[in-house]
Length: 347
Image 1 (cartoon, rainbow, N blue to C red):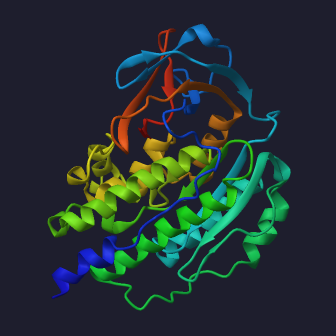
Image 2 (cartoon, rainbow, N blue to C red; image 1 turned 60 degrees about the horizontal axis):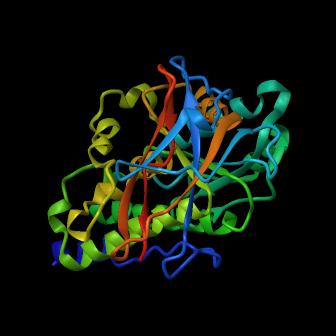
């Protein structure tokens, strides 16, 4: 009985991100806007390129760039917004305490003066809390952090597969809530999610529980997450607080097998909705195997300091939710372009 109920628990919840009413329909051109971070061999963002240096491929076919701009994150209008998520659902009390210590260390850098506006989000068993408005003042954010109690667990099923399923649903709902809250705000949003990820979706041990119904629900959720983050202009970065304690571990590498976009329900596996896969596909990075969480947060800010915004017209699909892979190539050697990896086209 438990084996039959578990797939229902895992996938009966449908994720539906808010969709802007201005989205084109009925075969009209649907612009796809990409935030592209170009880095040199040392990992530093490069800000001196022009339109001729970029080529966009949609399902391996070159497409015309309809708009182009180089963005200085510090002077961008509207400003780039950073949301740092402290995940108290998928981490132990000890790891959560470490997350807070490292975040405090980052907020105190440069005498508490932040390069970009920052909001703090707290993912707990009870709710997702995003207090106040974005701030450039590290000391104000430290005060908000110190006011937030943590370490209190309210979920009864905290162990085993049922507990992992609860935490996964809580986490995906939090992602949906954050995207919905900021989707109407102009400008790029970068979410730095400090978490080892949802345990259920970083191991292959229960994929055999999938049914046709749960695969269809999972495919809907994958499409909804992809569309919701793209239309909200949101990129996810995942920092694993387990650091060197997780180095070489299964979870740090397993997600890489699922980075290609899902084209149909029968291709779905639980790992396609893991935090690491969502982050990578949104154009962000997965940072693990380092104990310097504060330094990793700073590296995410560097990606926001200089980037490019490129647009192209999405293809009109033959069928609903037709996946299209995106690749951006830069003509100068030795440079790496980081951006979202695909989108779902519509008829």
